Length: 341
Ligand code: PLP
Ligand code: COI
Image (cartoon, rainbow, N blue to C red; front, side):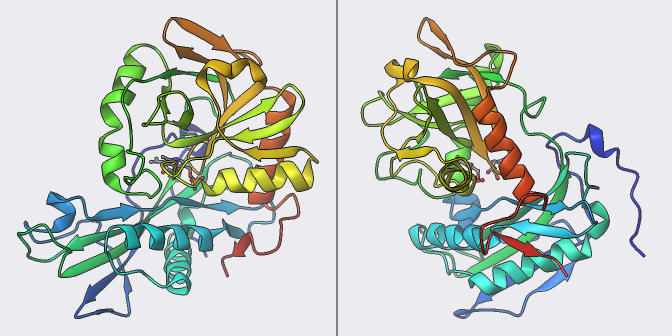
């Protein structure tokens, strides 16, 4: 019998609440221990941990979905495991084996089953794996020990309103350097984004858009999400750059656009002074799902895509297909869905 919670699922936003269990595994003397579920949500680590001083840490984000018939499923957890390991290689942290990553996520979801929102509420269980450098260390070098952990939190929409258009403003700040860490999921990228985000919100926008750091001419990211646009001749276009985080949602949408909707797909430069080529645009990511972009403020010009109030038909179909796959209503490509047993 599942434990019950008092959560008002329809009212959830994107904020932390403590759930019952999390997973931890420690790397010491060259290997990961067997890992276990624990109830304590506090960490005790050395004051000299590299994660605290030198940003040697990373995280991932994925979700568990409740289907109509009550099952619970994950969307492409293997891709998150692979991306976390790519981040680990960039930061000289030990990789966590893909199979063990998936198993840890499954254990956490299963142990916190009561927090997986019911089907139809629009809410999901957000899962946050992270891997950090710990142990005593002073010089700028890799940590002597590492901690891998996974916790989960039930969430609603990341941007207020869910599938409702929101507006963004182009920032002058860079979130990443051309050969820096923009293409991996390290916390430092997000620390650097706090100020531009706050400035965008103060000006009345949902978040900011980052241009490419080398030329400031091309769109890179929409806050903590990737950008896509639908051209007037119905192509799905998304920017390409080594400093963009390779979004699992974005690559999934590229597949959906091509295989489910018969659209041409292009991953290429998207110029900020050529927004007229798009009739619709959106931000995509695990947390953002698909957030339609109403308009973009760039310098003194405000460019509206489809509408500031309504969602365009292609964006709507992309959203319905993606979430249909995630919630088990639309047949998924092979290997995308992992059922929690
Ligand atoms: N870009 C950034 C900077 C992000 O933090 C995220 C979220 O993970 C994304 C894009 C979207 O990636 P994904 O679709 O894998 O969640
Ligand atoms: C995600 O979509 O998982 C993200 O990384 C966004 C987040 C930083 C809240």
